[in-house]
Structures are given as structure tokens and as C-alpha cells.
Image (tube, rainbow, N blue to C red; front, side, top):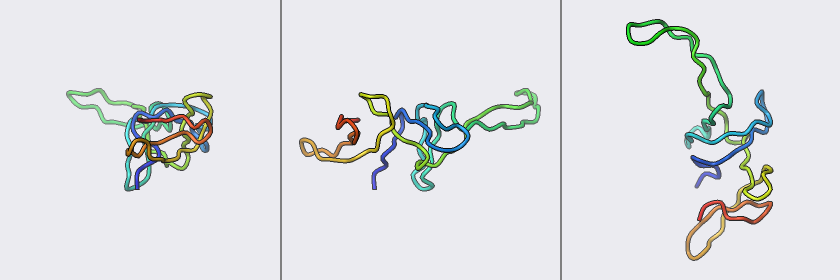
Length: 104
């Protein structure tokens, strides 16, 4: 089944500590149904100092479940659901609020 959210999409967080924040999807994990969003769900990685890298606290993005994300409508800049339809023999995604095609 194709994913409704793919790499490069602008999304908004619906629940959790980052509710209301927006960002771009950098990576999608289809088996676990999770995604990495730039600047969202940040966690601290404590690293040990080595010869090549300085140690300390390094912030990095953690995965967030796709059900906690909503695509941003290209027209109204509000959260929207995603639908699929066939246009010219090709399956494309569209925003259900405005009907605008997302890719294709």
C-alpha cells in the first residue's frame, strides 16, 4: 500500500510535545510506519569524546509515527487528509480539502 506521506512533504504535528509545529519529512520508514521530520521530536544524544569528534550533548531528530502527522494543504496552508485518484492513467495523491494535486 502506498504511503500517504512521503519524503519532501510539508507536514504539521497533530499530537505530542511538538503539537502545531511544521517541518519537512526527511525520511520515511515504511515497515514501522514512522518518519523523520526536520526540527521535530528532538532528543539529546550524549556522545563520548574521541580523537576525531568532540564529546557532549548532540541534538538529533527522533522518529514520529505517521498517524501523528498531517500533510499541509498547498492552497490553504492548513492540515488536510490525503486521497488517491487516477489522472491520465497515473495514480496521484491529492489534498481532500482543496482537491489540489500534490504530486503529478
